Amino acid sequence: MTVLEIDTPQGLARAYLHAVDEPVGALVLGHGAGGGVNAPDLVAVTEVARSAHFSVALVEQPYLVAGRRTPAPAKRLDEAWTAVVERLRDGELRSLPLIVGGRSAGARVACRTAAESGAVAVLCLAFPLHAPGRSRTAAAKTRQPELDAVKLPTLVVQGERDPFGIPSPSATRSVVIVPGNHSLKSDLEAVAAAVRDWLPGVVS
Image (cartoon, rainbow, N blue to C red):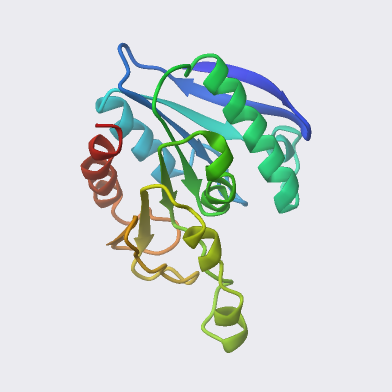
């Protein structure tokens, strides 16, 4: 693993690069709002992707690098993420088909910036469809439009008991429901299997 420190308009970000020999593609993943790049589902997906000959970069947002627990506003997260992806595409991941994604808040960032990232597909782990709860208020404040705006092939892996809701599939979006909740820790092999089945098709 190589740790890259990358300057962004929002401060220093880090990318943990897990490179493979003769990669067929690259996967860049962001973390959730309250966690880091060591989340179990991110670790599991990294292993699966590397076994499928994808180099993987796990990106730590500047607020986390700076030791803050509270996420930056969406615009700042998007700016930092875009800067990191551009740097990786111009450097270590040059010329590789690129898949962007992340878990929870990181998935939202990847969706919002998918059009400008040069990616060929998007991977969402535990996409937070709405605030936890089943109230009308929570349901009304859906983030489904962030997913619907993505025109690339998209995979959403969601826990069947996720209190943040379950997104709907579309012509370009597959939604795989696995055992567990928002953490996706209950059945990491199911998460891995969903990604393993999907990855080869988006770069072929």
